[in-house]
Image: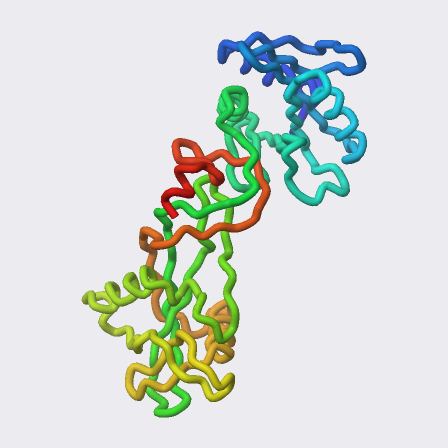
Length: 300
């Protein structure tokens, strides 16, 4: 962020926060002093007060928490804007609303919620001041998801017929755009590719004129001599031989290098089951329920 006319980055951000809060109808002051603290921007709401702190130079986590505790003691919600995360900060914390401010190409300021969402500064302030940004201990997928199915070639080890199987990308997302990677294990039946709603998408595409060249075998439980057990698996469309997870994983790695990709499709779908991940985070879902809301839980 480049200073303008000798004004420091710190003061540019402070002035932008001050003017935005006042424009939004909140009573804001700069350099407000307390007993043993001084807030860059202090905002008095109807029922809550806020202190916004801008940190463009390095500051340790220990020092940040010490300063935050003074606001907490005095019943003030401290909110921090950093350019670079303080050292030793290993994750988001409920006692430390800490976000990252950046300058865009048009010189406007935006705030990042740890890469999940990036909001214009004014929009962030409005939502934070009215409680639309909250701390949640878990991340939960929304019902509606955008997915990409990548079909790739897989030669049958038994009959040598050329098959196609697929994998799913990207990760599912929560309402606040947190990436949720569900647990997947080799030789297990818990893979996203084997979810009924994903299988239905693949089958639907294969049945179209565009997808009729895809040779997709049945996805079902098959017995594996490798593990002496059965699990959900891809199999040959011609002879129904199992495609073992180890070989499927190797084939997926080849796709990363551009080998064997036959088709990629993008679809919007509804998950049959909500996926939950223990992920403490500051949540901004927009018009959707928060990750830990009772409405979200009742949908699962």
